[in-house]
Image (cartoon, rainbow, N blue to C red; front, side):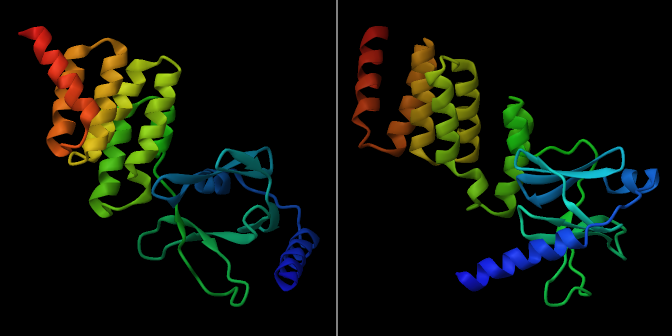
Length: 232
């Protein structure tokens, strides 16, 4: 633990002691500013204010320590990054500079197209249709990805229900059903959202689906039986 702490402190000292006053040209700013894919649902955003480079990652905006025109140190990550163009694709990347081999090249975080948004960003904007498109792409590449975990979306949906925002809760649960069409849990949650919103017919339809997948769901069976008695 002491060795690791010393290493981090040494890295911070070196970075800050090497900090330089960098003059960024407008062409350089234009080429490097934008979103870089940290992963399929997370981005690093590089921006400039006057002659200062800023990085926004996971909602926190920081000013990295500039070490060269193409390089900067990020204390929150304990990493030194450089801008790098791929020789074959000509795409721009943020590259992690290796502590042991700083001359090695790695293409870590690809610069995304202008206007690109992650599924999580679309969900935050309540643009659920576009969020679903992105999430389905993630599922195609990795059906077990943590980014499409059904329980994560359930938590978001129930948060909306607690806020009496039934419309958005239903949208989230419908998205979850499309991502996990064989899960009784997703239909159960959607049925509950319709029920509390006052839509008994759609509640019934989704409780029927969840009960078909899980015969042990007595709450769903009770609702189905009561609904069918009323409509007879």
